[in-house]
Length: 318
Image 1 (cartoon, helix red, strand yellow):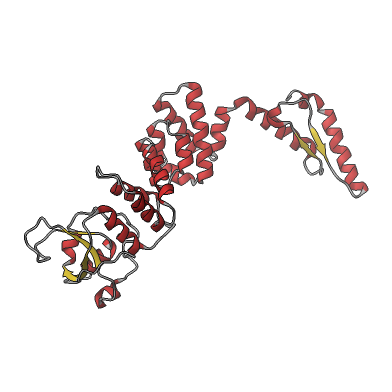
Image 2 (spheres, helix red, strand yellow; image 1 turned 180 degrees about the horizontal axis):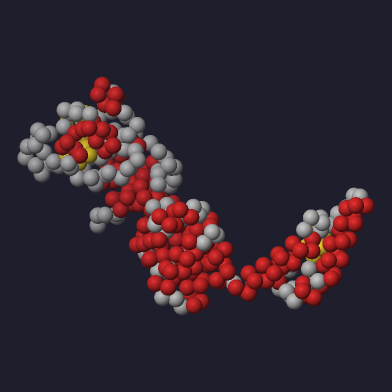
């Protein structure tokens, strides 16, 4: 824990909420757990603030202050009509202040991509490189390591803006983002739209959809507008991934559909398992069945007869 021995002082909440929002990077937290009752009774640790020495006046009501942590709590205090909240001065240094904010936040392993990237932008916003020990300290407070944090943030930096925003908004995972980084920005932006959200696709299904979309886009040399139209058509379908798969592999999908129909018409309910070679690239089908009674064997025999009767139709698939 950082050691801050400065005395506490009182500040009107409105002064803090009107200050620079530099460290307002925890939108769903930032002291939200303190609660109105504890604020009213003063049962909280003083909020860390940066005092800007360039101002001649030392009285808190006349000087510029930057709140480092506790934005949600201070807004709650302002809404509750508190005249003042207790604060404590912390070093006027971005990385030191960020460390203190993380110590107050106490969520190792629980920070969103957007929160982590906001921290990274703070740390790298100046011309001075961040020392390895400081980076390691921040990494440990994040529940990781400085090296791992830096590596992940550099991957974020390398993404196009629209793709990065999708990752930060948690509509794309980083691996899918890197794979599909060259898709038109309009397609990536569509991931945050109401139609795509209504489709309810998981990260895994989104990965499949974008991979197929990218393959079609490159194969057919689609314009960005045509690519977006194709994506919209897929999202409007009952199964967006299957829709694009039909566009990407029309012959294979047609073979699969014909085989599924033949299998259903010849073996349904018989207990016979009939499988085709992968991608229909082979020269034989496979049959498997078991039986433990004469009646079961009879059903299997009937299914085999149906298959034999339609042998030429099966053979056409290979």
